[in-house]
Length: 361
Image (cartoon, rainbow, N blue to C red; front, side, top):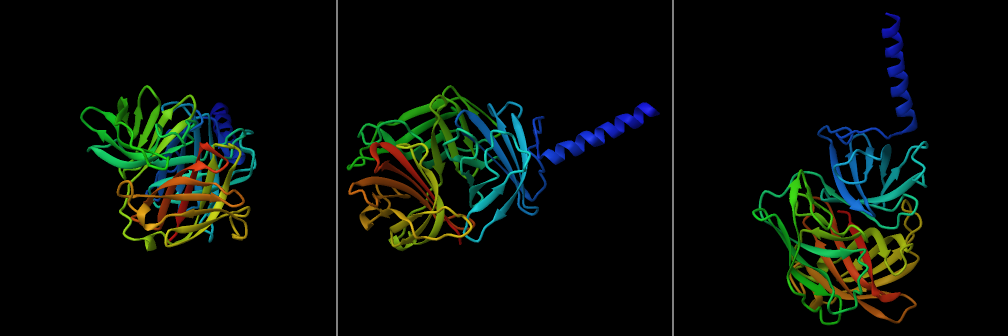
């Protein structure tokens, strides 16, 4: 009887200690609370596989880091969040978090029900964390728009494709680049190619170049090179009917491979294809007083070089160089609109700059 009592007390103490510290290094393969009010998102960045379970009703999240999608978690963090009036989300980490998480909170965006984007929060982490809904492998052939993220190639070259269309065949399990365009002045078309062939389990497609992530909403993340951590982001496209579609106030992030530390939160005011982009230091109170970039798309750049894309120019204020930019624009989310862009960096034309903007309804 004494043995049973002490065993029960030890179990209670162990459980309480795990809750107090706010994180665990044990396996929680369920990904946290999986009731009907939660949504799980997964994706890769900088040699790790991540998942976050979003519990909207209780304003909580469960974040897990793995060395690969099939591995046990390196750690599990239980945190809370605030959906801010600005359109950003603030993720708050527990005080007793893993030592690699260097801040008490970080900024995030929820792109409708399709994807989740998180500002870097680990020591040494420079890449934005893009996650997509974890549901199932494609049961039908898939076609979607894509653009490069964190690409180390010379994106000013007419031989380097930075955006286009890709397809997935359920029969031969192959991911193919069907259309690819450069960020040069002529939007030079590249030769069609096959990225990978492999197998898909749940919604993770494992292949030689890396682990690729699918969702039934035609949103996907291609791990283009798991050594240099280059990725392609796929997002369903919508036709841009007029430049008035490219209007509104948005929030998001800029990441610049010309300076990996140059990743920051932004707000944007867009009107008929012209956007003033502001650097923001306080995601709760947007000031819009530090105009950093201007993005301009004219009518000739709408649905060019293919439906769902918008091409134009990006200007870094104080720098006279105008660089080429290409964006995927999606207005068909349940709530809000998304603009995902790839551009030659004004700081170094050979390097890639990415813009992620979400326009709340």
